[in-house]
Length: 357
Image (tube, rainbow, N blue to C red):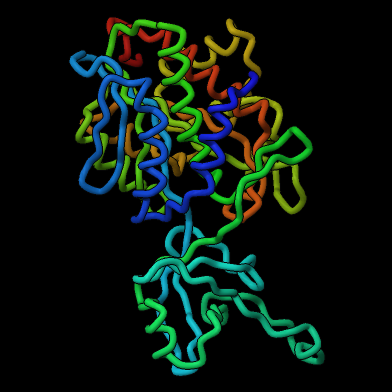
């Protein structure tokens, strides 16, 4: 699938806009501006989950969903010497923090800082220190706590990485927060294709960009009760397990460039999953399989367990280096996930039998 210039421009702007868990507003505004021409109506809930609706008057409702938030840090403690200690907001990885530049979202705007770390020369003849929440710290150039506060930085301020989008070897998209704003991009592209191809749907389609997935699927949990869908198709990222130090016996065998990953799990509904697989076969879309015990760990679980049980399925995008600032996805896979969701949506009928026997 070749990407439109306007689509790539949106993707770059969307990825480069900070959208930390609980503070997704700026990213959501970029997303809503893009989908507005392709939907009949846009709604946003009290916590910031937003969704565009095609056929809002229809009784039968189908959700295609991604999550909008990215992992980040909170300012937790400021020392008398002006150094800042942090706690996680989501699954932030302390091992990649040392020497990273950060943006501290203070009350007076963004302040730059760096995660400091002792020089290699000073670490000789001692046990090599391991980055931990207790010993990583941010230096924003201040020498006292008052100087830090004068910059507008207080406990509770959000901290993000500024690493921006680029393409690698004309094969990969690379950026922080591809988990899972790339999902928001893909469902937005489904909406665009439906509009530009003048497709008519016999149901209401809710293109949903949920908040707060990284801390417990909270946004999806709330919006599922609001929308009360009949079917939900969720897209998120999953691990490319072909890179070093990943055990395939534990994590499965998925790789970038081999197609969307269709999940098998208790919360994945058999009928919807088989519809997706059949669509992939008929449309000759490459796909991979993966299994999750108990839960998928994605918004699929929130939708599936809502409203007495909503038939839900998960289409994942293989990704390298999850929860780092250099997350990578294959452009080919991104196009195929868009195509698979698009073609599956076109096959859904309100009268289809959803009960599994």
